Image (cartoon, rainbow, N blue to C red; front, top):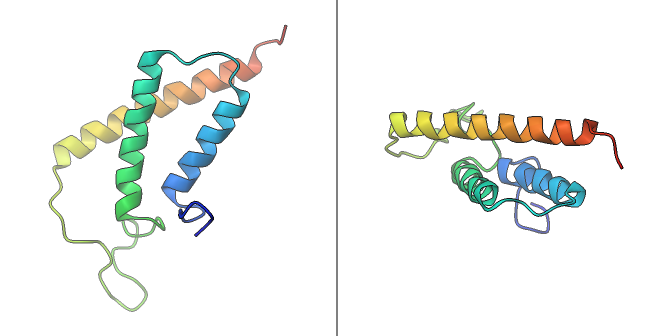
Length: 107
């Protein structure tokens, strides 16, 4: 764990690093709608990180000793699909916006 209590290279840690870089390069205020979407994206990411902090549980449901690592839970697959579809669209749009911002000539 790092000083924040997050596992380096974990999903929430990576998200925090992306947010820091975005905030360091941003020169204008963010729109309220974008901030709400950013908060929703973070909520989804934190929920995944709470279940799979290392990120290995979803890729490897058993550890090297054969012990099951995925906690027993009920998952609404339809809601999961919708949430991940929305998150993918949001991140794709955000990354395209960042790319365009960095490509724009500076004044």
